[in-house]
Image (tube, rainbow, N blue to C red; front, side, top):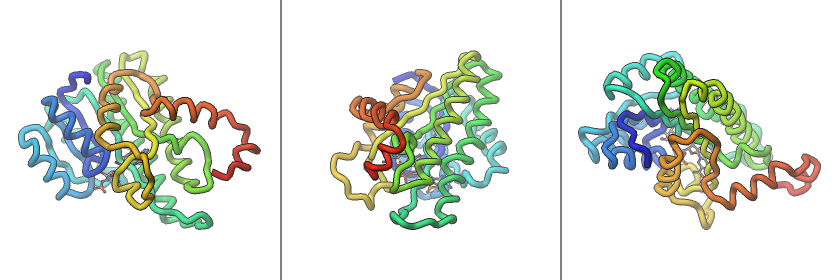
Length: 242
Ligand SMILES: NC(=O)c1ccc[n+]([C@@H]2O[C@H](COP(=O)([O-])OP(=O)(O)OC[C@H]3O[C@@H](n4cnc5c(N)ncnc54)[C@H](OP(=O)(O)O)[C@@H]3O)[C@@H](O)[C@H]2O)c1
């Protein structure tokens, strides 16, 4: 794992984000752990008292992001890694169109990411260093019947992060997109799927890739399968009804 000293994890109160905080702290990295559920964050901080700084924040409070970002980097004493792990995927029925649910996904998965990662982009462009990591999803690779807006939100996030990568690589900044498949977390608890990945394994993979510019599937089989799926013509993909 790369040797990070100061990190921000946004979406740190459960699932993959909480595991990222634990694994970073275990290697001695100071981490600002950001999310809305302060009790969960305090629990993490209690596990690593001098290393984890809990920060209660709602990523849809976009106007406050610059101030929260500056305070977190000040409290940490620097920044060499930011991971945007916050995400929302409400349950959506196969024939349901609920704008309120759809808006939450765009607000958290896309606009929150832009609000936070823009801050990191400016800082790292100036320091000519640092790693920016965003958690996309295999779900962003195609528009599927089950989760139209979740798919669209992850596709938008992936494209935004690709553009950051193309802008910032010339300044020596690493920009990384990770595309996990189904992972056992609170987000997927209602799915009762077999064979899901463990959050700790996904977090370990993310940290291994965090100083490697590029886009990464967590499983090799996903890389192969989604290469094929991405290249299905739209008329054929529609017939598969997945
Ligand atoms: N689980 C999967 O199968 C899977 C697969 C591919 C990609 N992903 C992605 O992986 C990332 C982590 O998800 P997870 O599976 O670990 O789910 P999770 O346990 O539900 O974690 C989601 C995190 O996002 C935070 N969050 C949500 N809304 C927020 C808001 N308005 N402000 C601040 N933080 C907010 C939550 O914190 P609070 O509720 O405390 O605010 C929580 O820490 C997400 O981007 C998800 O889309 C997950």
